Length: 108
Image (cartoon, rainbow, N blue to C red; front, side):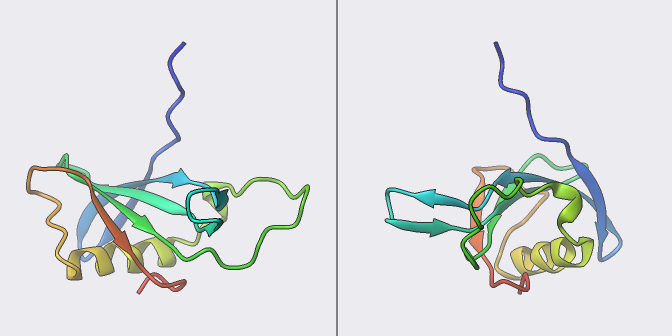
């Protein structure tokens, strides 16, 4: 049985259409012995090269709280994160491997 992919959402940044999805929920990582923040997978609507934008962990979620939903993520935060990824050197129209970019809590 194939794993169901997360829903994608459209957003426009600098007059260009992009698509984003929630790649990773904030979670505990046994590799780093600490919390990891959420990560968003982003690509240009006509492109194929993805960037994974990683956010800092923030506060540890309380036990029993529901999972983060993509609708809870502000479009302004996603737009700033995409702009930061482009400023960091991500070329959405180029071909190649997925690029991982770390941003701050505000997407900058």
